[in-house]
Amino acid sequence: MSREFEPYQRIERSIITKYKKEIWNPFTHAVRDYDLIQAGDKIAVCISGGKDSMLMAKLIQQLHRHSEVPFDVVYLVMDPGYNEINRQKIESNAKLLHIPITIFETNIFAVANKTEKDPCYLCARMRRGHLYSKARELGCNKIALGHHFNDVIETVVMGMFYSSMIQTMPPKLHSDNFPGMEVIRPMYGIREDAVIAWKNYNDLEFIQCACRFTENCTMCDNGGGGSKRQEIKTLIRRLKRDNSYIEKSIFNGIHSVSIDTFAGYKSRGIKHSFLESYDEKTPIGPMKESVGMNRAEMQRFLSEEVQSGTDELEAYRKLMQKIGVTVPKK
Image 1 (cartoon, rainbow, N blue to C red):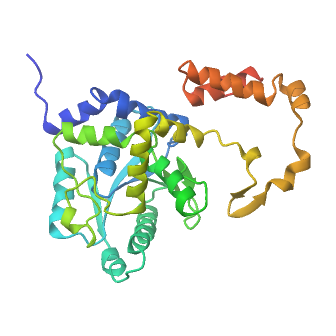
Image 2: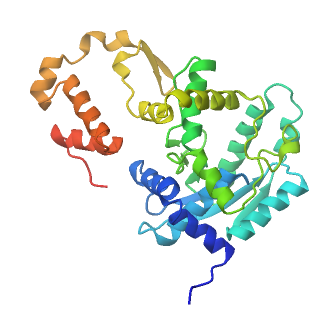
């Protein structure tokens, strides 16, 4: 006789069965490859009420139950001033999904809505500060955010087009203003299409931003109006028609940045010029003598590995082993 599952159990099972390849595997790979969670961590999983953060909560909940690495979790919901409908939607979804949320109130919407100049930026900055403060108060050393694969590549293009910088979201980073606190992004390799497919498959509805600029679209997951991010999302979608690998190419690009080819770069807030080390670059000859391969041979090795189907991070591990560099096992 087949076992009857509760709704939340069917939703959980869909993550590790139907969407194992698209969601669960990229999630566990990110946790492992980017070393996001260590023994003894206490993680504040930040839930906004949208599809991405709710899925992230379920992923970390699953990992928490079955991981051999012991860590603790708090499912943190900050109410920035939601209207009653949105607040109830978050609470009902958390109950449906069996996520034990901790809610705290702020007046962020009231403050941000008073300014007409970039209220979204102000809102985001204030949200982050409140989340850091609450997470520290609860004894957490990390906060998990639900940024996914598409957020990462869109940020690269946005930086180039609108900020005159080549930058993106790292898988994890140390907080400048809250010493000892880290941000982790465990959904780094999960595509937004997979998140939407999982949501629709399970007949789930989530809120979006819910501030006064988007209140008339509180149940819409694909809003964004005329934002720059939405413009970039549309642009990448158009480019994908001619090059189906465009998204993966951008993503792979941020894992293999050739600093030696840049005229300038910034590190830890300090600008640098290529001239600083121009006369100190290692010649190709001595490099080959020391590691057995020159730069061109290394690049060719990596390209051949990736083209044969090897994961890019694994290809780098193979290269390091080939040139005699000790690489820790996964």
